[in-house]
Length: 308
Ligand SMILES: [Zn+2]
Ligand SMILES: [Zn+2]
Image (cartoon, rainbow, N blue to C red; front, side):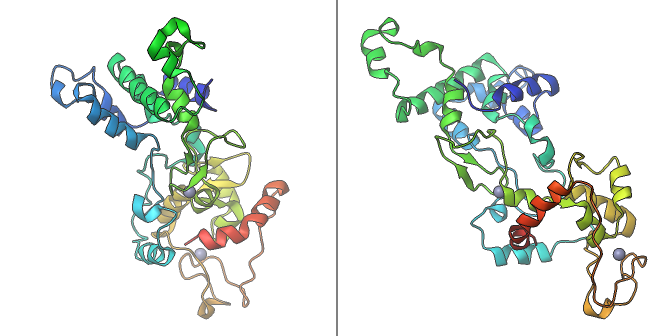
């Protein structure tokens, strides 16, 4: 009984270590035990720890250039547009966020699991908190009452052998780690990883080869040859912050090279290389991966409404 995708996350954790330095600092109770024991998580009162853990059930990142609050699905779209329009496009893209590379989210580990691996005490705290939550809602009808009354030998399965954090996380709703929208509640119709993002946030943070060529006048060949542009090489999706960083390096700005009416028939005002046709009908890059492009065209409507 375990939540989907967790074995892979566990393996990844052992291989790469804790993904978040902030998390590591907050809960590493072993390396600084002598220096400041009173400040470590495992010495706090259990009630306080449980309160902290309640915020970690759904770890948050945010969308580039926005705060967590501004990234939220229910944040006013026009207010968000105002924030984005004021962004300084001559500054580096917002790449210092947790889970900034959504193509690597499968390597990020849930804070409950990360905490459990830091020390025996943290493991016990997370288990205790999760066990309390499982008991409180008892969504799997476990025989807690009988256990309390007649002891561990009176019930099956053995309640002391359950990994309660896995059980609780399996039950906890799946939320987009960027916009915090609820994507699914238990029982999930399809298996999803604990740390995941919604479709809309994926499109906000990625660009396709033809889009990159159209908006930044950077050729597909340049993108494909650039080791700094992360993406899914098996399809046509690339991380927008990396493309923006490349554009900044090339042109001194992350602004789109979009043609305005006064530019039609003239060279691009940013790169001065590409000449806009009189009607601004940009020919699309012929991708060999037509399946992905078909999928993209189906999603275009959504993308238009979510992009800013
Ligand atoms: Zn989202
Ligand atoms: Zn240009």
